[in-house]
Image (cartoon, rainbow, N blue to C red; front, side, top):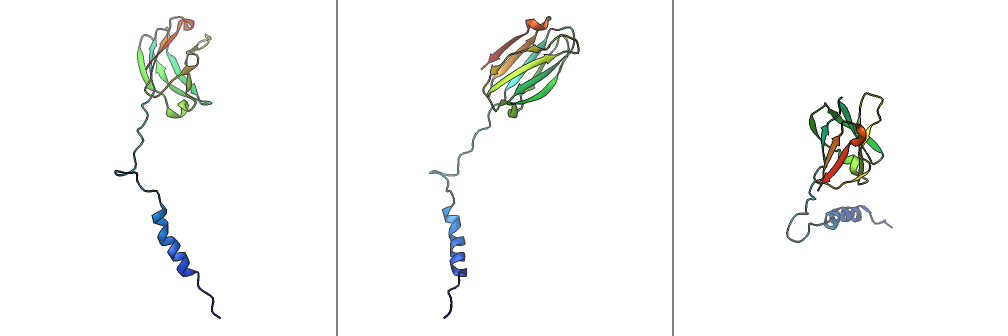
Length: 130
């Protein structure tokens, strides 16, 4: 007695597989998720020396750049640092003074963080524009 071949059954299953794939919703192709707006940082350095700006978030840190005395600079926060929704900024000098810290900030996509580094680091101020 001859055994039936599995080959026709496998071919039939493979031919039917595309029909089981997810079809686009009514009215056309699947929707595209918009890219979240970046979180930006605007730093004003009123301290007498250059400061390095660091961002801390989601158990990671990133150096954003340097801002010279009396100048302003803008930075974009890397999306990986925003995974937890909270962020901290620090302005670090080359002196023995401790860093100026923003404290923990709760940010959402599109926010603009104004970080004003004071002439005395403990006088630094942070504001979030939504």
